[in-house]
Amino acid sequence: MEKRKIRVLLAKPGLDGHDRGAKVVALAMREAGMEVIYTGLHQTVASIVNQAVQEDVDVIGLSIMSGAHIPICSKLMGMIKEQGLDNKLVAVGGVIPNKDVPTLKGMGVQGIFPGGSYFNDIVSFIETHAPGR
Image (cartoon, rainbow, N blue to C red; front, top):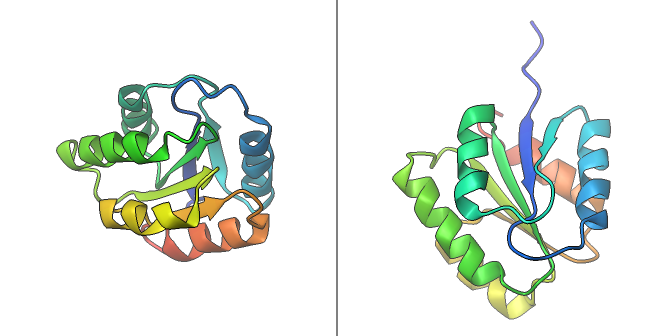
């Protein structure tokens, strides 16, 4: 019996209008056999959490280029806890300074991929850490 494909919700929260990186990461995930739901630009944290519930995803991935990763991830992790979605793998990529990594990990963000991360590293992390793997 074949395992269910890993389902990933890839979102661009806030006012950040740059999504080329997110689209390329989505393509790499699809090529690795994952189902990827890309939400498009300018998503609210509430809409991301709602879509994660509706789509029954295993992974919530955020692409944040605006520098607002700390407040966005703080709000996201709070809503995830409120909704009982603690079993979802949460990953964030984009412009993330090394000094912010411990803060993000402390919030419960499991995967952190600053600009320049390799697609293989992202895919491998998800394949290893997604729920049920």
